[in-house]
Length: 208
Image (cartoon, rainbow, N blue to C red):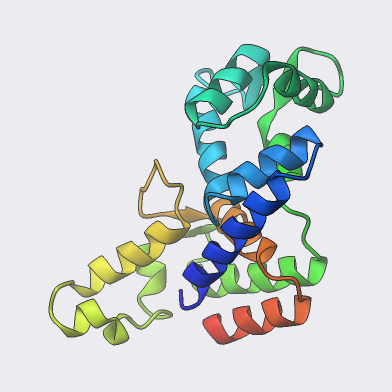
């Protein structure tokens, strides 16, 4: 999407700057994810999902530590323990990773969330809560894409590449869930200070 790579670069630079001054473990983890661009938080979520062998959507402290390590997060063990304890609200020794990712997402105003949901609903033509290549065919015009114009890519390849930018980085299945779409735009949102500008950008991008 036009402009997003520039926002990504700006956000990564800002996140790295903030990382050097923030002390809160959750903020530090958030900044490490955002320093990787819009898909940073989404990528960490994907790493945890792979580790959740029994699909109960919770992590124990060992899985949590391994997930951070596998994703290449630089964090002291005691800092990670502090963070785990903060998320383990009922002291069960387990954390709910949906709740964890929700807290990790940069805060967003309701106005921003609403415009993201409008874009998702517009793209999800079938209304099944997942955006697929079929959904895109009537909404996104591939014919303006330079690689389609020079004959390098088919229309389907353009759509697939487009979906890949929202999809979880290690699980590109050509389908984008509402959660993945929101996680992606949380990253973009973190690089844009003004609500008005963010909403305008979304409305222009998706002709809302």
